[in-house]
Amino acid sequence: MKALPLLAPPGKDGAGIGGARLTARSATAMKGGMIRGFLLLLLCQLVGEALARGLGLPAPGPVIGLALLTIGLMGRNTWRPMRDEEVANSDVGRAALGLLAALSLMFVPAGVGVVQYAGLLGEHALALSLALIVSTALTLLATVGAFLLVKRWIGGEAA
Amino acid sequence: MNSFRLWVYLQTTPLFWLTATLGAFLIADALAQVARRHPIVNPVLISIALVAALLKFSGTDYETYFKGAQFVHFLLGPATVALAVPLYRNLGLVRENLLPMVAALLVGAVVAMVSAVAVAAALGAPRVVLISLAPKSVTAGVAMAVSESLGGLPPLTATLVIATGVIGAIIVTPMMNALRIRDYAARGFAAGLASHGIGTARAFTVDPVAGVFAGIAMGLNAVVTPVLAPIVLAWLT
Image (cartoon, rainbow over all chains, first blue to last red; front, side, top):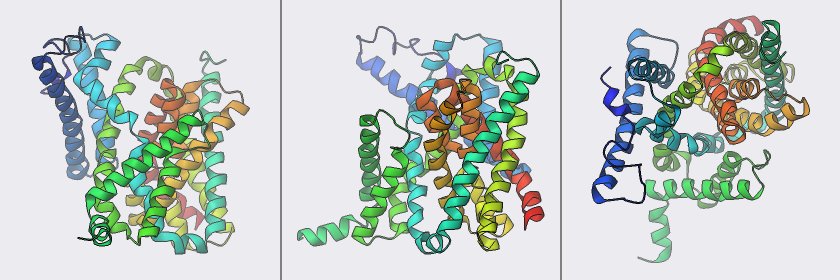
């Protein structure tokens, strides 16, 4: 795996450990770490997009990238086991948690697209809003029901 | 340059709309915090309302807005990849729940499409709207591709997807609490399956395990719905 050095826990080069001593060198290392983590996320997405297009896979590129990064982390763990906080504090761990903390924000631009369809939406407002509310509630119920039923059935701890 | 001309200039620049998007979100998020993350005070919904009002007030079209907002929109891709980290950190829990997840995925994906199309069809929505509605529980990029390949209107689908996400994020917590469901793996899985990334973002604010399972459900549904959508639509319409 080419990406292995990117998963190195921080502290190796001074950043993250003994936080008070933030020297110029460790500040640079921290910045480099963020960029390395973000680069690994972009690389996984890029390979995912290439595979999705190239092989005509039904899954979208970022979802394949998600699978690739998970497999990469699992492979890395068999080669050199990492404790949970080492994963969380690794370059890619910090970049990932930073991005996920802002996940809600990323839906705003697509959501504002509603302004373009005010006419069409208004015309079918009742049908669409009822369909969305009823369907979302039913989907939540059916999904959680199927999950818990099968878990109980196979004798999971939920029983 | 007088202030009116300065404003006319600024409102056409990407910088202005990127700033407005972040600013609107911070206001919305502060409101959600004041409301102690009550589900009804949904930061995505409030941000969209604030930005949409600003667009209307300034007479700006969506294309101009998106030139600035695309930088935020772009991050959805790497953020989806980033779900691998919490997924990996909870791999043991995921392995334990493999069979329940498969069952919930198939049941949920079918119910999401059939129920939405059936209700809208009964209320007289035309075929093109039904096609655009069918993939509404899947993450926006995938749903738009499904809609396009089956003859729907992708931008309408994007709007319905976001609305579904907001509705799911608002109702999931009160619903699961009312049903006294304390299995956060099951709760999160339902949130991510029914309402994709917005449900996942909500799940992460409630419980980290719920967030992980929501992310998995979102990813799996993005694979299953494109396969099932043509079958379900052919059968229903």
